[in-house]
Length: 178
Image: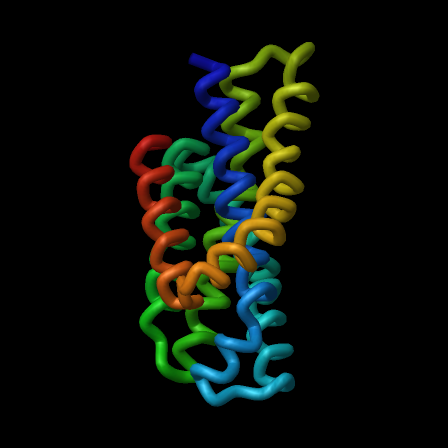
């Protein structure tokens, strides 16, 4: 069972941290054109993700202590799913700003509680390996995102559909995890 938990944590890193965080960079031109935004708006939106992450990281860790890593991670995945789902339908800068902050909140919940979840399943002499495997998912998610997104977009998929698809994948991962 613990290797299943590790696979799910690595999957969280791939989807929640690697892909969900980085795919907007690959579709920025289409996203800005669709919403009628400019480069300064994009800078604000990118900063909003980090703002959500920074403001919620400490409470996210405390929430994991209070509710348990399992519940906190599920909430984080659902927050990311809601953020990306909302992103697929937003029509304004302010709507996009809210979804970007929401993505940071979801990411904070995931980041603050992954190691805690692994510590509940792995002995101390294997915890470093487990955390290393879980965090390798970040690089895998980023790499796969930068490889896959241009190909997905070239096939005719727009950024909104891509957002909705990632939202669905995150929601499924949340249900499987919980």
